[in-house]
Length: 367
Ligand SMILES: *Cc1c(COP(=O)(O)O)cnc(C)c1O
Image (cartoon, rainbow, N blue to C red; front, top):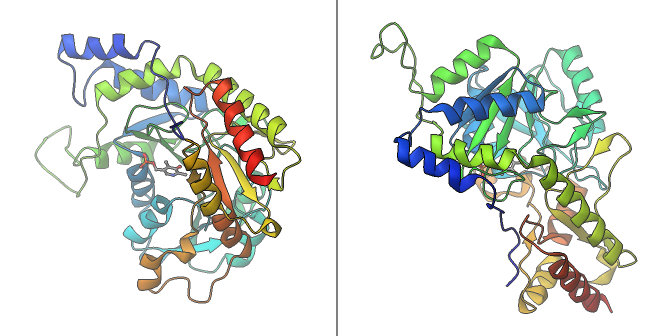
C-alpha cells in the first residue's frame, strides 16, 4: 500500500532526540523549545512563537486569549477541518461559514462582507491544501470593521501570498506540526503573533497560569498545552530541510499535474499572487463522469493506493446541526467538492516511481 502521507525523518532528528535523552531534557523545558519557537517565528515573519501540544489547541487558545463576549461571531470557511469550528464553539462564540472558491478551495473572500453583522468579532481564513487565501480583502475588511484575523496556516508551511509568508499576515496565526504536515514534530502546534500582550497571555494559558512572582497563586484558569523538548528536537531537524521539502512538494505536484492533465478532474491551481506548497495533492472529479470520490478511492485502494476524501463542510456536520447552527445554510461549492474531491499520496517519503504508478492507475479509471 502506498500511504497517503509518509514523513521523512532521515536528517538530524535522531541526533537531536538522542541529545534530549542523554541530557535528560525530555519534557517541556529545554533549549530546543525556544530555538524552535524563535526559528519558526522568524521564518514566518512574526515576533513571538508559542509552541503548543497540537494545532487544534493552537486554534482554541488563539480564540480564548481574545476574550470575546459570548455569542460573538467568527467568520470562517465551511471547507475546513473540524478544529477551526470547534475552537469557536468551545469559546462560546458562533461560527459563521462562507463557501469556498471553486479553484483554490480556499474561502471565497467575496462572501465575507455580507456575513458581517454587529456581533462579528473575527475572521478565520484557512489556507487550504497548500494554497494561500486571498488575504488583502480580508485584512481590509478587518481594518474597516475592527475585526481580529486568526490565520490558520497549518497546511501551508512555507507558502507565500504576494511575497509574504502565510502565517505572517493575521493578528494571530496558528500552525500544526502533525505527522502529515510539511514539517512535523509528530504531534505539535504553534501560535504566532506580533502582539506582546497576547503572547504573554498565550504563554500563561499554555502553562496553567503559573505566575512568576508566586508560582502557585492563580488569577486565571489555564491549560496544560505544553510542547516537549523531544518534539522540538524533531521539529528543528525538520526545519533545517524546509526549503527542500517545499521544493519536493512543488515537484511532486508538477509531476502529478503533467500526468493527470486531460482527465475529467480539476487539478490544483496557483494564483499569480500565490506560492502554493501543495501540502496535499487534491483533485476534484467532474460530476459528469458519474464517478465520485468515494468510488474512485475504493478502486485505488484495490490498486494499493491510499487516498483521503476532501473535508465535509462544517455546515454539514451533524454535531453542529444538533447544536442548532447552520439551519438552511447551503454552500454549493463546498458540498460538491466534499463529494467529488480526494487527495493523492503526497508525503515526503514518496518516490517518483510511486507517483507515476498512481498516475497510471488514475488514468485507467477514466479510460
Ligand atoms: C491539521 C490541521 C489542524 C489541526 O492540527 P492538529 O495538530 O492535528 O490538531 C488545524 N487546521 C488545519 C487547517 C489543519 O490542516
